[in-house]
Amino acid sequence: VYINSKGTENTIILPHPIFNSVFSMFRITRRVFRLDKSCVVPSVNGYIIFWQHAVYHWSKENGLRLTLQLVNCRNPMHNCIAKVDDKTFIFGEYGNPHPLGKNIYKTLNGGLTWSIVYNFNVNEIRHVHNCTWDEYSNRLWIFTGDFDGQCKIINTDINFQDVKIYGDGSQTFRSTGVFIEKNYIHWIMDSPLKEVRHVILNKETGEIKLGESFPGPVYYYTKTSDGVYVICTAQEIGPSLKDDFVHIFASRNLKKWTNIGKFKHDGFPKRIFRFGVGVFPCGDYSSSDFLMSFDSVKNFDGKVVRFSMKGI
Image (cartoon, rainbow, N blue to C red; front, top):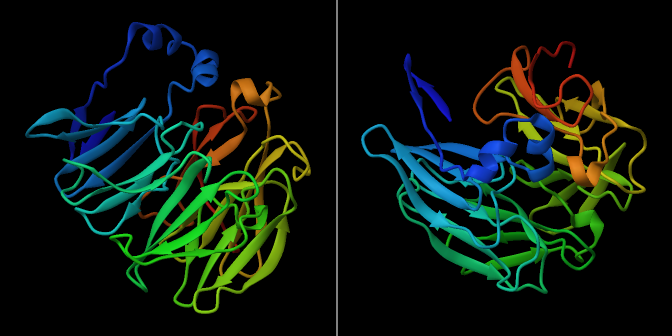
């Protein structure tokens, strides 16, 4: 991990078994074994790093230290870790089913220590997709999946004392991201099994409305500093896929969506070599200058691309 802060660059060497070192030399084997999947989050006292079933904390003063060993998860999905403030972060375990179920963890000291604040049993959900802090209500939204009965939209206080569950567990409530307004939350379904729609949930009543349709499930979301909402469809496997492209959509008002770009899947078998997807960085950036990285798309697999949007 390379960190450039205030003109000073630091290199963090993460623990890397010989097996991983050999197969990391080639992009194709990195894809097969998911060896480059990680998340890095800045906190008040350094950086929180999720890497290969473990959570680390790094600071210039104290270096790298292991803070949490994950049993049920390699790392969370990108940009799906709730930031309450610079010291308080909450995330849920992603990954394959495990007899111990899936945990939600919280840190109150910038990632130096973690505690389990909630557990889903193995029959309840497959994994946690997203945790997002709602600054309007000072509450947490949690999204889970994947199959019917497991797709929960959960709203809770920070201590999980007042937990509310929305929806019927169907694919309509399957989401990996969210846009939050004062009175509504918005998601685009993360389902390869059913037509993908923009869903709007009324926070007070729990009622939903369906918006536009999309050509595939949506994994990742961002909002630029100048107010543009951006999402990216994924190339998964299932009847909701309309073509062989990863599409980028943008909106100013969360009502009308514009398809601003598409990238063709590279044709490798998806289950083995990863689904095609585009990922947004965290942080502040404008629609006129922002970055994306791509997996399994033609010409841009494993690369970062700089974009500029106009006319949105």
